[in-house]
Length: 262
Ligand SMILES: Cc1cc2nc3c(=O)[nH]c(=O)nc-3n(C[C@H](O)[C@H](O)[C@H](O)COP(=O)(O)OP(=O)(O)OC[C@H]3O[C@@H](n4cnc5c(N)ncnc54)[C@H](O)[C@@H]3O)c2cc1C
Image 1 (spheres, rainbow, N blue to C red):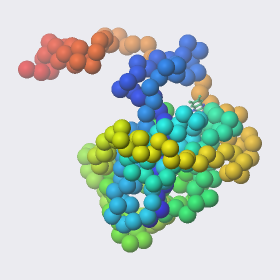
Image 2 (image 1 turned 45 degrees about the horizontal axis):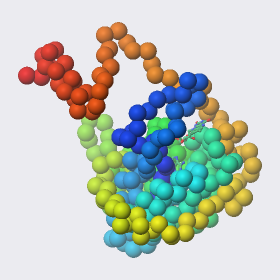
Image 3 (image 1 turned 30 degrees about the vertical axis):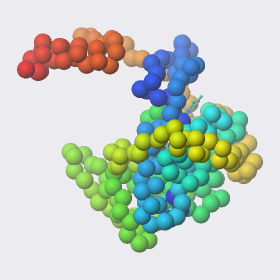
Image 4 (image 1 turned 180 degrees about the vertical axis):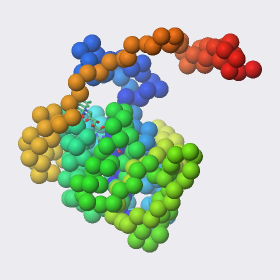
């Protein structure tokens, strides 16, 4: 099975204190530590497990700048066979539709049976997977937490309200957005990273993909971020300060004081 996993390079929330830029346009991106979007890591692991069961290849693809290559290498160290970088100044500032149309152009150049995305990324829009499926006119299922191969079909589990589970059949080729917890992503060691350090990663731009200038990127974005801010704290709300351990200790104290913990 030919599987493509869409991965995004995102600020690592475990490693950074995220603050918002004064002009409300974005987060402060100087000196941030980046990693692969958590959901995409589960998607890559799932793709590798499927390939190991039924054969085929796993390709990881990202829309980003040259620095995004590092997450492709990380996923290749995990076990993905190939990486593709989609980079062009024309892609900068794309909205979800823009990202999905860039990915679609790359997908149509290949011959994939299954496209996996994360259920959501750092901007939390949860839109790229669904839009991509609609653009390709392929079936789509969201929040997938189980995949079983059944010939030309897949049996997929979805997490639904109240802790219940739904099982569906879906035809290939299809797009699935993957929920965290579907598997246990394997550890990526330094040795694995070194092994793929010099593997060539092709980079495709707007021209290679046949994407018309101005059809993606900031100028083509139909969803424009108008503001980005931390909401004013509500009455009685308290923000816990300190390290994670200190915050946990304070929270336990507070819960005990309010009778929530014995
Ligand atoms: C400088 C800057 C300017 C921006 N300007 C705008 C703007 O004007 N309007 C706007 O709507 N958004 C803007 N964005 C947000 C950006 O385009 C979002 O990443 C995009 O809308 C996707 O939303 P999301 O991250 O919430 O992805 P989701 O839809 O939540 O992601 C779901 C899945 O889609 C896949 N995916 C998402 N992004 C990528 C990617 N880059 N490469 C490969 N796979 C991916 C992954 O599998 C991911 O798990 C901007 C971002 C930056 C950094």
